[in-house]
Amino acid sequence: MQFELMASMMCANYGNLEKEVRELEEGGIDSFHIDIMDGRYVPNYAMSLNDMRYIAGTTSKPLDVHLMVEHPNTRIGLFLDNLRQGDTIYIHPEAEYHPSTTLQAIINAGMVPGIAINPGTSVETVLEMLRIVKKVLVMSVNPGNAGQMFLPYVGKKITKLLSLKEDMEFEIYWDGACSADRILEYAPKGVQGFVLGTTLLFGKERPYGETLQNIRELKF
Image: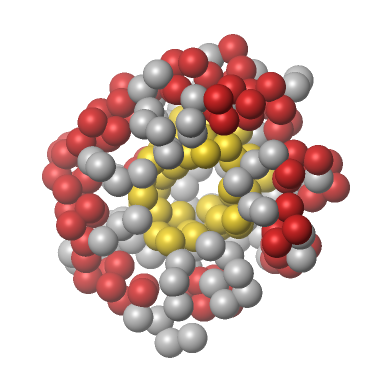
Protein backbone atom coordinates (compact mmCIF):
# COMPACT_ATOMS: atom_id res chain seq x y z
CA MET A 1 0.00 0.00 0.00
CA GLN A 2 1.36 3.41 -1.00
CA PHE A 3 1.26 6.32 1.44
CA GLU A 4 3.55 9.24 2.19
CA LEU A 5 5.66 9.70 5.32
CA MET A 6 6.73 13.20 6.39
CA ALA A 7 9.24 13.98 9.13
CA SER A 8 8.13 16.56 11.68
CA MET A 9 11.35 18.53 11.87
CA MET A 10 10.42 20.41 15.04
CA CYS A 11 11.17 17.07 16.75
CA ALA A 12 14.64 16.70 15.19
CA ASN A 13 17.97 17.08 16.96
CA TYR A 14 19.08 20.65 16.29
CA GLY A 15 22.59 19.90 17.54
CA ASN A 16 23.30 18.56 14.05
CA LEU A 17 20.45 19.42 11.74
CA GLU A 18 22.36 18.62 8.56
CA LYS A 19 23.00 15.07 9.82
CA GLU A 20 19.32 14.67 10.70
CA VAL A 21 18.22 15.76 7.24
CA ARG A 22 20.74 13.48 5.50
CA GLU A 23 19.83 10.42 7.58
CA LEU A 24 16.11 10.95 7.07
CA GLU A 25 16.64 11.43 3.34
CA GLU A 26 18.79 8.30 3.09
CA GLY A 27 16.26 6.42 5.20
CA GLY A 28 13.52 7.04 2.65
CA ILE A 29 11.46 9.91 4.07
CA ASP A 30 9.12 11.39 1.46
CA SER A 31 9.15 15.00 2.61
CA PHE A 32 10.13 17.32 5.44
CA HIS A 33 7.35 18.88 7.51
CA ILE A 34 8.25 22.36 8.78
CA ASP A 35 6.15 23.81 11.63
CA ILE A 36 6.34 27.61 11.80
CA MET A 37 4.78 29.05 14.98
CA ASP A 38 4.55 32.71 15.96
CA GLY A 39 3.63 32.41 19.64
CA ARG A 40 0.31 34.15 18.92
CA TYR A 41 -1.86 31.90 16.80
CA VAL A 42 -0.53 29.01 18.91
CA PRO A 43 0.99 29.38 22.41
CA ASN A 44 4.47 28.29 21.35
CA TYR A 45 7.40 29.15 19.10
CA ALA A 46 8.81 26.45 16.85
CA MET A 47 10.83 26.57 13.66
CA SER A 48 11.93 29.77 12.00
CA LEU A 49 12.23 31.08 8.47
CA ASN A 50 15.97 30.43 8.68
CA ASP A 51 15.40 26.79 9.70
CA MET A 52 13.12 26.35 6.71
CA ARG A 53 15.60 28.03 4.38
CA TYR A 54 18.42 25.83 5.63
CA ILE A 55 16.48 22.58 5.13
CA ALA A 56 15.31 23.70 1.69
CA GLY A 57 18.95 24.20 0.71
CA THR A 58 20.10 20.89 2.18
CA THR A 59 17.66 18.45 0.58
CA SER A 60 16.04 17.91 -2.79
CA LYS A 61 13.02 16.32 -1.10
CA PRO A 62 9.79 18.35 -0.99
CA LEU A 63 8.99 20.56 1.99
CA ASP A 64 5.59 20.75 3.67
CA VAL A 65 5.44 24.10 5.45
CA HIS A 66 2.74 24.41 8.10
CA LEU A 67 2.15 28.07 8.98
CA MET A 68 0.70 28.39 12.48
CA VAL A 69 0.81 32.18 12.38
CA GLU A 70 -1.68 35.03 12.55
CA HIS A 71 -2.53 36.75 9.25
CA PRO A 72 -0.20 34.70 7.03
CA ASN A 73 -1.03 36.89 4.02
CA THR A 74 1.04 39.74 5.47
CA ARG A 75 4.22 37.63 5.41
CA ILE A 76 3.54 34.88 2.87
CA GLY A 77 6.11 36.39 0.49
CA LEU A 78 8.93 35.61 2.94
CA PHE A 79 8.14 31.92 2.64
CA LEU A 80 7.39 31.85 -1.07
CA ASP A 81 10.75 33.48 -1.82
CA ASN A 82 12.63 30.74 0.03
CA LEU A 83 10.83 27.62 -1.22
CA ARG A 84 10.90 25.66 -4.47
CA GLN A 85 8.07 25.13 -6.92
CA GLY A 86 6.17 22.05 -5.86
CA ASP A 87 6.65 22.58 -2.12
CA THR A 88 3.48 22.71 -0.03
CA ILE A 89 2.26 25.53 2.22
CA TYR A 90 -0.59 24.98 4.67
CA ILE A 91 -2.41 27.86 6.32
CA HIS A 92 -5.10 27.83 9.03
CA PRO A 93 -8.30 29.43 7.67
CA GLU A 94 -9.13 30.90 11.09
CA ALA A 95 -5.83 32.83 11.10
CA GLU A 96 -6.73 34.98 8.08
CA TYR A 97 -9.58 37.37 7.23
CA HIS A 98 -9.55 36.25 3.58
CA PRO A 99 -7.74 32.89 3.39
CA SER A 100 -8.53 32.43 -0.31
CA THR A 101 -6.29 35.43 -1.08
CA THR A 102 -3.35 33.77 0.65
CA LEU A 103 -4.08 30.46 -1.08
CA GLN A 104 -4.12 32.22 -4.46
CA ALA A 105 -0.69 33.72 -3.75
CA ILE A 106 0.60 30.22 -3.01
CA ILE A 107 -0.87 28.91 -6.27
CA ASN A 108 0.54 31.83 -8.30
CA ALA A 109 4.03 31.06 -6.95
CA GLY A 110 3.84 27.47 -8.20
CA MET A 111 3.46 25.95 -4.73
CA VAL A 112 0.89 23.41 -3.57
CA PRO A 113 -1.90 25.12 -1.59
CA GLY A 114 -3.16 23.48 1.58
CA ILE A 115 -5.23 24.19 4.66
CA ALA A 116 -4.74 22.79 8.14
CA ILE A 117 -7.87 21.96 10.15
CA ASN A 118 -7.74 22.13 13.94
CA PRO A 119 -9.63 19.55 16.03
CA GLY A 120 -12.26 22.21 16.81
CA THR A 121 -12.70 23.30 13.18
CA SER A 122 -15.69 21.76 11.44
CA VAL A 123 -15.56 20.63 7.82
CA GLU A 124 -18.60 22.80 7.06
CA THR A 125 -16.70 26.02 7.85
CA VAL A 126 -14.00 25.28 5.24
CA LEU A 127 -16.17 23.60 2.61
CA GLU A 128 -15.70 26.25 -0.10
CA MET A 129 -11.91 26.22 0.30
CA LEU A 130 -11.79 22.48 -0.33
CA ARG A 131 -12.28 23.27 -4.04
CA ILE A 132 -9.21 25.52 -4.03
CA VAL A 133 -6.67 23.48 -2.11
CA LYS A 134 -4.82 20.32 -3.11
CA LYS A 135 -4.06 19.13 0.42
CA VAL A 136 -5.91 19.10 3.74
CA LEU A 137 -3.82 18.59 6.88
CA VAL A 138 -6.06 17.22 9.62
CA MET A 139 -4.79 17.99 13.11
CA SER A 140 -5.61 15.12 15.47
CA VAL A 141 -4.24 17.16 18.40
CA ASN A 142 -4.45 20.85 19.25
CA PRO A 143 -1.59 22.61 17.42
CA GLY A 144 1.41 24.09 19.13
CA ASN A 145 3.29 21.28 20.87
CA ALA A 146 4.60 17.78 20.10
CA GLY A 147 3.60 14.73 22.11
CA GLN A 148 -0.04 15.63 22.77
CA MET A 149 -2.94 13.24 23.31
CA PHE A 150 -4.96 12.05 20.31
CA LEU A 151 -8.51 13.44 20.15
CA PRO A 152 -10.68 10.51 18.99
CA TYR A 153 -13.54 12.55 17.50
CA VAL A 154 -11.18 13.65 14.72
CA GLY A 155 -11.81 10.26 13.09
CA LYS A 156 -15.37 11.30 12.20
CA LYS A 157 -14.03 14.46 10.56
CA ILE A 158 -11.67 12.38 8.43
CA THR A 159 -14.57 10.14 7.39
CA LYS A 160 -16.47 13.22 6.21
CA LEU A 161 -13.46 14.53 4.30
CA LEU A 162 -12.90 11.15 2.67
CA SER A 163 -16.44 11.33 1.28
CA LEU A 164 -15.62 14.69 -0.37
CA LYS A 165 -12.07 14.29 -1.61
CA GLU A 166 -12.75 12.66 -4.99
CA ASP A 167 -15.33 15.26 -6.04
CA MET A 168 -13.30 18.23 -4.76
CA GLU A 169 -9.90 16.81 -5.79
CA PHE A 170 -7.81 17.14 -2.64
CA GLU A 171 -5.70 14.72 -0.60
CA ILE A 172 -5.87 14.19 3.16
CA TYR A 173 -2.87 14.17 5.48
CA TRP A 174 -2.69 13.27 9.18
CA ASP A 175 -0.76 15.38 11.70
CA GLY A 176 -0.41 14.67 15.43
CA ALA A 177 -0.02 11.59 17.66
CA CYS A 178 0.57 9.42 14.59
CA SER A 179 0.96 5.82 15.75
CA ALA A 180 1.20 2.60 13.75
CA ASP A 181 -2.43 1.89 14.67
CA ARG A 182 -3.53 5.17 13.08
CA ILE A 183 -1.68 4.36 9.86
CA LEU A 184 -3.11 0.84 9.80
CA GLU A 185 -6.62 2.20 10.19
CA TYR A 186 -6.58 5.27 7.97
CA ALA A 187 -4.17 4.54 5.11
CA PRO A 188 -6.52 1.87 3.67
CA LYS A 189 -9.42 4.32 3.95
CA GLY A 190 -7.65 6.86 1.74
CA VAL A 191 -5.50 9.12 3.92
CA GLN A 192 -2.57 9.95 1.65
CA GLY A 193 0.17 10.78 4.15
CA PHE A 194 1.21 10.96 7.79
CA VAL A 195 3.42 13.41 9.69
CA LEU A 196 5.78 11.46 11.94
CA GLY A 197 7.01 12.95 15.21
CA THR A 198 7.92 11.60 18.63
CA THR A 199 5.27 8.85 18.60
CA LEU A 200 6.94 6.81 15.86
CA LEU A 201 10.09 8.39 14.45
CA PHE A 202 12.15 10.66 16.68
CA GLY A 203 13.90 9.79 19.94
CA LYS A 204 13.78 6.02 19.38
CA GLU A 205 17.54 5.34 19.35
CA ARG A 206 17.33 3.38 16.11
CA PRO A 207 18.27 4.35 12.54
CA TYR A 208 15.59 6.34 10.76
CA GLY A 209 15.79 4.03 7.77
CA GLU A 210 14.94 1.02 9.94
CA THR A 211 11.96 2.81 11.49
CA LEU A 212 10.65 3.99 8.13
CA GLN A 213 11.03 0.56 6.59
CA ASN A 214 9.11 -1.01 9.48
CA ILE A 215 6.28 1.48 8.96
CA ARG A 216 6.10 0.75 5.25
CA GLU A 217 6.00 -2.98 5.97
CA LEU A 218 3.00 -2.78 8.30
CA LYS A 219 0.57 -5.65 7.71
CA PHE A 220 -2.67 -4.21 6.38
